[in-house]
Image 1 (cartoon, rainbow, N blue to C red):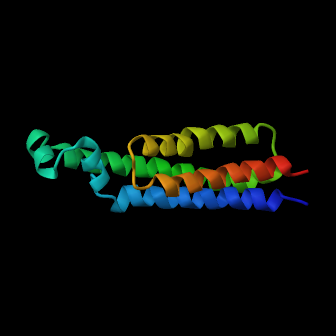
Image 2: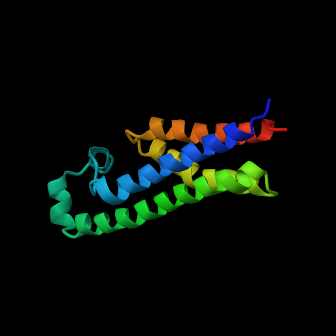
Image 3: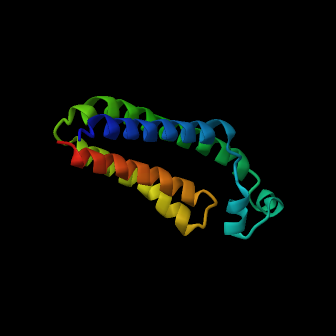
Amino acid sequence: MNFKPYSSTLLTVCGIILMGIGLYFALIRPELLPEDFRYMALSSEQLQTTAPGLFNWLDKVFWVMGGYVFTTGLLTCYIAQTAFRERQPGVLSVVGLAGLSSLGLMVMINFLIGSDFKWPLLVIAALWLSALGLFLRQK
């Protein structure tokens, strides 16, 4: 069975999801989520008093982070439709390392902090791994 279109399509889906996560971080995500306050064991009022510029600073941090996550997704889509689809030398290593250093790290940290988003992120990482597995099965 030819898994070529499935592996590149699945990796493209992962890229599109990352682009959506990037847009969420840059445009929609509040500075701190309820899970952030739980993890820090502080209230919004305590943080405002202790670090009055924190929320404004975090807003800008998430703009930048969102841009990077969006760009990672965009480049993933491009690689999936070009080098990954064409099985260019080294692409499996690059895509594997990119997934590990982006999604893999994000999933690990979200589990460490007990994030509400840990399971959906794990599903996305599993999709990425599935794309790699399909790539390996391709003849």
